Length: 371
Image: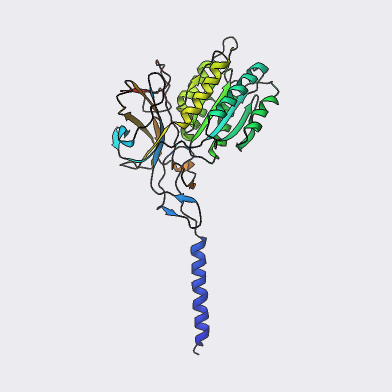
């Protein structure tokens, strides 16, 4: 029996509708950004209709670079031609560059163990207030306290008053789970809105109560690509190795450690951190020989500085893990955000190819290149 023509038309129309619905149900392509700080291959770029977000394609390795003179003053106004990037000794072509003053996701990790005193907390609060005044007005903050355990008190807030008020509600007691707090802080900023991410750790001593050891937290820091700045508040307890611990935490992350002698110096140190976050250069490139092998790739950045800067200090990340698929976290980057993979500066003093090797003491705690 022949099927009536109207039935055939209805059948064809339903088939087309089902096919169209299947296409709409397919997942949108996302830019590859690894929570471990590793580069990953992303699908083809496209703009989402009626959406302010932009989808970026390609395996982009990007990082922040801080350029100062010998006096510690930032060197502004450099263009991409001033920078030369090497990946495992091979020169790369810079495909992304920005010196834009971009907002950041900042985690504040502060010690409320028994060794801290009310005076130390007040000093930290006053210095943090100066940091907020100097920071980008759109920065967001997460607040983590720690003693026997680490606790997330505030998550991704822009309310500076709420942030500072938390320093007046603490009860100082217990031990120091510093490493656990750092890991919790890394997780908090990883959920942040912005590609630029940093952690500020405020403490007066070493860890004595964490479930993780330094080797484990160091690997987490390298994978996260988050810059850590540490503020050691004295005086230290007798025979404390707090200074060494705090310096290593900052060094392995690519940040800086500060040991303020007084209240004014502490405020100045917090202000310096805020200025550094706002004056970094963001650089990205597509590796000339991309391999998603999960191995460590060593980076080197050289800068052709202007004649006015006779001695230029360049601080940047020393490497990245390529395509660590076991910890990939695909996400869409907001329009006007730096499309970064392991963006933050990572400076360490490790001379070996293995980034987990023990660091040797140098005159400077960070890798510094001079021209």
